[in-house]
Length: 133
Ligand SMILES: [Zn+2]
Image 1: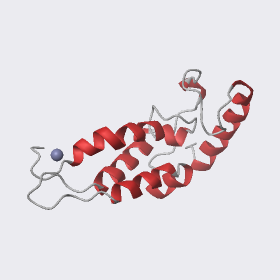
Image 2: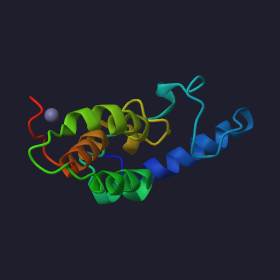
Image 3: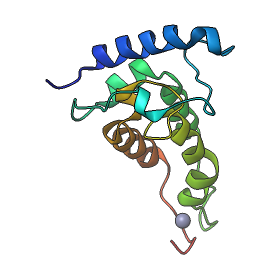
Image 4: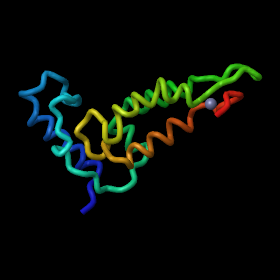
């Protein structure tokens, strides 16, 4: 039976409750040094929409808002979307979704979540101009 977002949330809460005596972190954060990836069941739920993602990880919404504030300088000044993406946004994205996600939520940890978030956020950046990409 495919995993649902609801199930993933319930499992995350249960795992966090079980771990609480060992961690001084908030219930949502986990200690990456003690975190076993095998603790979290594999996501079997298929594609995840952007709307579903921001529901379970609101920081993604803040990332999108930050990206939408980025303006290209007036032409012909060069602008590189990739430089901004790889230095400023992708490292944070890796903490929020995909296999390096810091939460025990199987939906968030899935490549489905990573793909959806990556496309949504990267596509919101202005296009490169005169940068050689
Ligand atoms: Zn570029």
